[in-house]
Image (cartoon, rainbow over all chains, first blue to last red; front, side, top):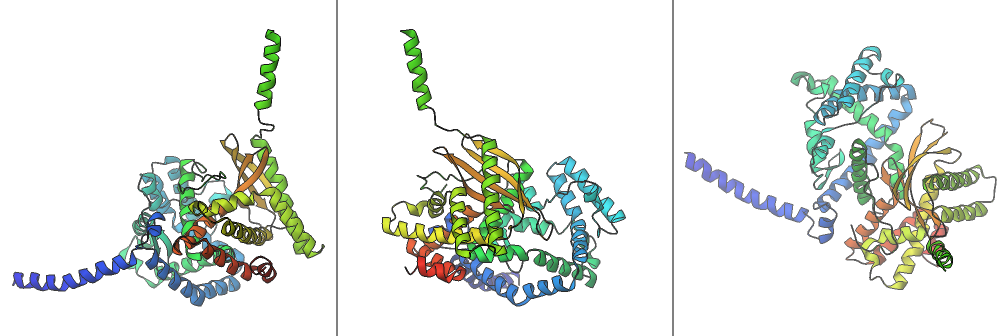
Length: 257
Length: 213
């Protein structure tokens, strides 16, 4: 019986494997250019980017604009403060994993003060008191541990990422308060908070979207480049070496570094 | 005899030294003065107090004072600059310059009427700095951090790149240009055509002058 099952499984898996490998090979950029840019899945990524932008045009941008129109500025600030505060356990876990004791203490202090005195984080009392805010995630922690970013990945809906940062994003779900309890994690309230966070994040990014649209030559590559630079900048800032690696502008420059 | 030799040596050393060697404070002063000047011109443009053509010409002059657009143009071509036909290279330089200046105009207009304060600098090399600045005073009350890559060449300071929100403009442009050319099998004309398309979106007059002229 076991032999029959294994045989059936093999027969089922083999064509699927062949199709999968073929799809992956097609999706992997065969061109030398794609390998040079650290984006071996460029054709697939471009396809996802096109769908993402269509989704943004049809749903996300209008929803974000409506949210901005109907929600007064102070209320939007409150939403942003609440979401930032809710993410502080993630930041705290990562500052610990990076061995940054000072940042851990400050983050713990921020979360405690803002949750209690800032009414669940709606008011950012800690910043008013001069406590520094940190932005750490597991992707950055992996970078601090020496893990390279790996191939560029365009995630559906969520946008630009990399193998390292995508993994980090998955891991960061666990220390987030919305996922502390499995049952509560799937509740309507928890999904409502996630939806509001997405809406608020998109609304705050409107200026960036407008700027990128007006300055783009190849919009997909622009997003890829901006994402990588931003992540490198976040990691370098943490290492105190923000301008260590900048390109050579010499007039006889003719080699890609 | 010794005195004469010493004098001759000193004279030779003085002659061999560069005519002008800038330091970090001069790079900071350069950014503060030149970048603020550009922002002020754009305020004139927005206020409509001067003739538009005059303000645009003034803006272009100030951009040329502030930034080394020729070096930026060569930079964005990356490895494709090597071996390019001189006529194609010249056409690319003309088209990219137009596109870049239009981008600077649209982006810096966001800062018109605001104040630029230099907050410090990082010396990367004896003639290479990153000048940090903050732009403030806008209607939303936000403070933007803008960093400027400044280099000295032949005694002249110029900006080569600007970083806003962690993203360097020229670096991003180079990745896009080289991608367009690479996807076209190394053909620089593809980048020229793409840039002309973008210029047409930006300003129809500029498109007619640069791409059809």
